[in-house]
Image (tube, rainbow, N blue to C red; front, side, top):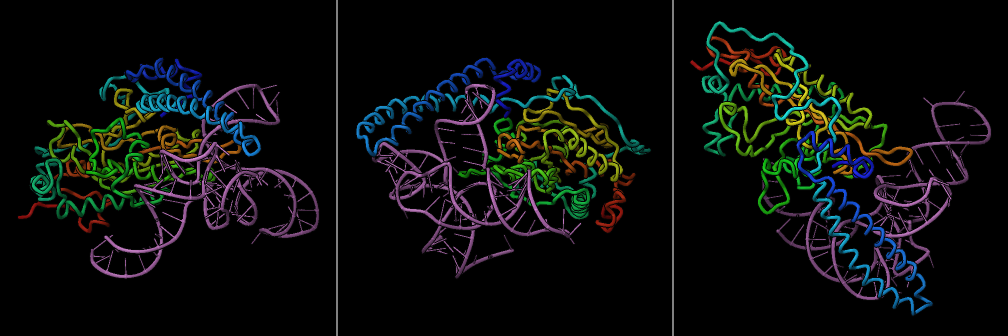
Length: 414
RNA sequence: GGAGAGAUGGCUGAGUGGCCGAAAGCACAGGUUUGCUAAACCUGCGAGCGGGUAACUGCUCCGAGGGUUCGAAUCCCUCUCUCUCCGCCA
């Protein structure tokens, strides 16, 4: 959701933004509905003022009561019309995308993303490399077969030392973020529609969510939803900003219609696990904290010894709620290429406006900005497997995780 | 699952039909004074949406939605949520 004042004052800005995003919303129609709605609202308010004034005379002027009754009839009609227009307006604005930052590249899909830098040495192998699916089966640490049996295709088990490695990675990451000023949360794994709408997952990604039957609840697609929703309707004290939050949670996505080579193994699944970074900050600070989250992501990957590249995500790959997004793509030796492992979005006031998250200012309240960024997910484990593999299929554990795993290598059972 | 209580401004908490957008306290902001890791006193201070250069001013909001009434935080109905006790339970 964006500020409708911008629509009224600078409609061309909105049009250009929608054009860049190939967003088909008819802005002129939107403007007209907004205008009609506001004209009518003023009429309604004038009638209400008249009604209120007369009501105060009623105790000693019985005639006023009759006048009030007449006004009420007229008022009811206008109120109904106004409510209709307002609902129509809300419906139209629900799909309005966020304003893009100036330095977002053009492009229709991820091929338009702009690489900012490559970091780390690619591993060199003098043996045929395996991908994580093969390694996972060899080492008996990933079980997709039984995931499908027990749940569905797209669900899987981490098992044995694989599960231990996963727990180590997630715990280590949470500790790193706590050390960097983040408050750790454990959040609900379900959220109501208002929360999903407010965080921008509805209506834009409606077919991605697992809805609970007969409940106003869906499984969370990310703890971003519950962490940002945490402050819905709050007025934050400015001295508490920025608020840095992190959580580890499972993430559920229906992933309607994504198959093929890119989906081999557990790269794209219905349930994955993520440590998230969320920052609430003053509007002028959001670019700075967007960079901070990126720096955290890079730090973690460097500590883990994973080569990666950073890309500035283009318009077509950005998503409507975001104003700017950085992805990090790690090197996957088994896959033989860079693939997305983190995603870091500056949502500016898009979420805070929908969720009514403000902070106090001398001249009134103002919407905060929110940053939402991955720290690590299972995909990082996949990268570790593929990049740290040995000729016999065993996997060396990255050094920083060894104190937590208690072992430095995962080997196949003889 | 059973029984009861409740939902008011950033927080605590008064308020049972018009003088209530709402007492009081806390917190916060500005000021005065005494001075010294602070206290006392004074003043201001809910949110949202409009109109006006401005002073100022209109509308809405006391969990949500409906109803009664000339008039609802206050009465009625429905729903949601929270808390307490009991039961069950990781």
